[in-house]
Image (cartoon, rainbow, N blue to C red; front, side, top):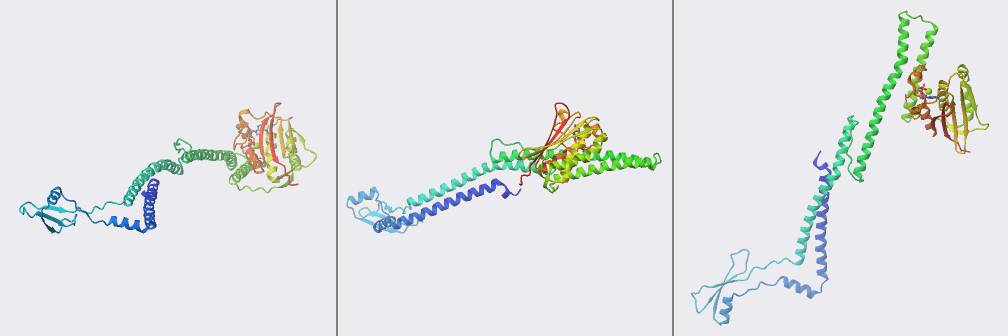
Length: 424
Ligand SMILES: Nc1ncnc2c1ncn2[C@@H]1O[C@H](COP(=O)(O)OP(=O)(O)OP(=O)(O)O)[C@@H](O)[C@H]1O
Ligand SMILES: [Mg+2]
């Protein structure tokens, strides 16, 4: 990664910039304030201050000279220019006239001490403080940025592993409740959901392949037998082949319905309709099948209309799937009860049968795709375990719910609830 793209580098630079700008601003403000205060002073005070600054250097006499002067001795003074660049003040060589051979005394005013004024020192301190703040800011930025960047880097690594198909990629969640910890936890939750979806997708593909293979193998076997002359090509055989083909197309149609619903493209044409009337019609279409299986249908419909918003074809599919399941599981001589009721807000559709009921462990699985409580039995009847998942999907698209339970006296009950159409 480019150095400048690292969060700690950016944060440190930002901190340094802030600290330097703050220091410079403080110095500038301070200078400005000093000038203003100076200008506001009375003129005589200003003059005094200025004079004080320009005071000439003062000579301080050595004890030897002081004694010479006290004794009133005549002296000779020779002035020489200074050859010391640090002190340009002239040098005075002083000799007592009464002892010309004595060593001359050297006298030079000290260089003017450029004593920094109070303001200058203040400026200096401000600059030092500014530099210290910059250093400290950069240090803190590095420490904090590292703490922020570490979980982000971990998430980025895990996300790229996930993108490469490693669905087991997870992050060690940092302690605490801050944003980084929440981000890590949410990432792990997302990875878990993806892993589960991926597992479901694989299972689904395996199930679909398995379901398609059975009728296809049967058809292929029979067709080959006919081709080889082992089986005669007669009407009964064509009927059986047609039955397998019909099973296949129902399976494909069911899969299409579910995948459209998954993609959010199963568009229902909802319209106001009477649930009672539709259930009555569906019961009539099942009469022949019920009679053939010697199953009695008890129809409990109210004498009034129950208005709901529904797609009539899709709702017919829901009722049809529930009725064919009930019929499939009810032995000859048994009974199916089809009931419609309502209260102030909801419409209820109940399908009860007198079959063996649903095994307890299967009750919350029957709406799963490809789930069959007794695999062998349903396979024999051509069931692929998609009927109830389609029921659930369609009911939910109607903003309804569906549930299953067993009656104490035996048999399964499927109950669908729809919101009432309260337009009028
Ligand atoms: N009325 C019922 N009584 C007992 N078990 C039932 C009943 N209805 C459904 N089940 C159980 O729930 C399973 C799933 O039902 P579902 O309708 O989804 O699949 P299917 O009937 O096996 O196949 P498909 O409906 O796709 O042809 C069934 O295999 C069966 O074990
Ligand atoms: Mg079914």
